[in-house]
Length: 231
Ligand SMILES: *Cc1c(COP(=O)(O)O)cnc(C)c1O
Image 1 (tube, helix red, strand yellow):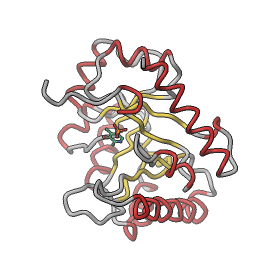
Image 2 (cartoon, rainbow, N blue to C red; image 1 turned 90 degrees about the horizontal axis):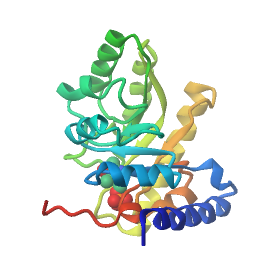
Image 3 (cartoon, protein in one colour; image 1 turned 135 degrees about the horizontal axis):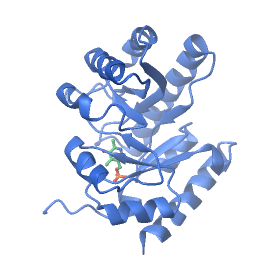
Image 4 (cartoon, rainbow, N blue to C red; image 1 turned 90 degrees about the vertical axis):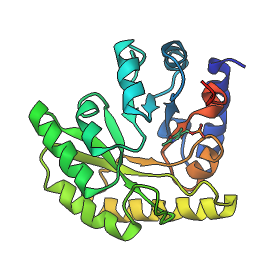
């Protein structure tokens, strides 16, 4: 199957899950996770109607930007972000989905201020409490949001999460439901319900994530095929 056919299949599954949770397919934002796929693949995905492309690695993103790989769609940064690379992402990515520490928020604020822009971000939630993963613990999210509110060049647009890779399907659904509850809670308490994005779900679980309330999914393999790590 081609990228275009894969996207049509993903869209059908998204639409069904959206209906099952009382929403329409138009309510769910599809981010194509394009890591390790070239500019031509990115352009095919954009032509086939992904709402954005998401990149994980700063170096790869920078190289593909130079090739105009993302022309026609917003670019999101979705991977682990090191503080010393923030400068290369701020102002390039329409949305940084992986803001997972106060140090990172401070650095994004600093770089955005230099450019005279407001950088849209999502707060990443480390829902599985994994030591090796970045992101705020659930009980830290409110405080992080409060700190971000004090920043003039950072705008929180929602939450993002990646559950532990070894979770069972049932555990995964519970993680999604917990982050959804947190999203609804801080949205009501702190943002007058103006947050827009709850980003959760990947190729193996985006339908479950949508049924649990996600309105943004990040799909790589189901669009682009298996990644070739041997190259
Ligand atoms: C690679 C990646 C995805 C997509 O993963 P697939 O399982 O290939 O769909 C989603 N989110 C993040 C943060 C990723 O790094």
